[in-house]
Image (cartoon, rainbow, N blue to C red; front, side, top):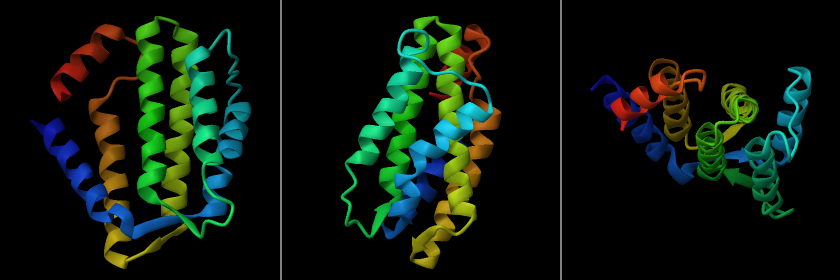
Amino acid sequence: QQAKAAKSEYTAAYNEAGDKTAFSTSTVKDLGNAIKQDLRANKVAVHPSGTPKAYEALQMLEGEINKIPSDAVGVKVNAAERMGRLLSGKVGEASRSGNKTDLRAAQAVKKSYDEWFSKVTDDALVRGDKNAVDALRRGRSTFADFSKRFTGDGSDKQVDAFIQKMVS
């Protein structure tokens, strides 16, 4: 019940922010480099043969970033949030693959993305309607709380499956 309520709360806040908020284009264009730098700093190696889903996650992210027109004035937060959902999907694929190294690497990519998203939101690198920006920050805070309380970290598949069943 609590998980569903928390999920509804962050979803409602993101929907309120909707298309009314945007990150600066340069901030989003630098996302791939920021994640790669974070992975290097944390000694997380990503390679197509050893960590295929994490590698695919980075490639997918670069592909999404490359779709941004060079003359774009901003990138809607919804588009950046979509990238996060795609990365979550890769974490799920890595979990189902049984490759623990790949799972840890994919989780590191997603964690780095989440930290980037929080940082640019907190550092006021978002522009738009004040109420929408506030809703975005509320949604991000609620999502962070939801993640800490109701999602598994991949270290125990039975626990993760139980948590996901409860949340779904």
